[in-house]
Every structure is written in structure tokens, then in C-alpha cells.
Length: 96
Image 1 (cartoon, rainbow, N blue to C red):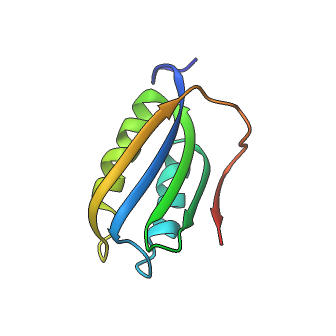
Image 2: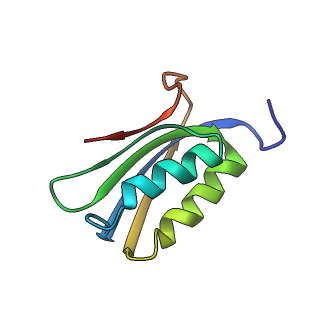
């Protein structure tokens, strides 16, 4: 275990103006810089869904970024749910 605390799994649902503003691309970039694995995808209702695994500190920094998003985004809400990690991810992917 690194210095960032225990590994966790995080599921996010981000609502607002989060599609068509490069939210997924920036999410993948930020997640990679924090050493997270998982995926991000757009949902039909206009929200963005994220599944990420990593150290607790990195996940908290990631949540803080998701609450703001990239420059053109307007985040209205972020739902977060933590669980035990599964270790199924090896990188962070943008799902189409």
C-alpha cells in the first residue's frame, strides 16, 4: 500500500452540463495523473458515470476535481458511492 491510504472503489454519477464539453477526456487525463484505474462514460440522460479504483487520497482529489470539471462544464451534482476494490481494471478508459 502507498502513502495515499487503503485502495477503494468509487462509483460517481455527475449531472449538469457535462456532455459535449470534453468532460470524459479530461476525466481520463486527471484519473491517469492520480494513478486511478477504471472508466468514464456518457449516459443517455445527459449525465456522466465514472467507476474508479485507487488509493483513498487520490480518489478524494478526483472527487474534488469532478465537482468542478473542465472549464466549459457546469457540474450541478455529484453522487458518490464507495465499495471494496475488485482489481479488475488495469488502466483508465473512456467508454463510448
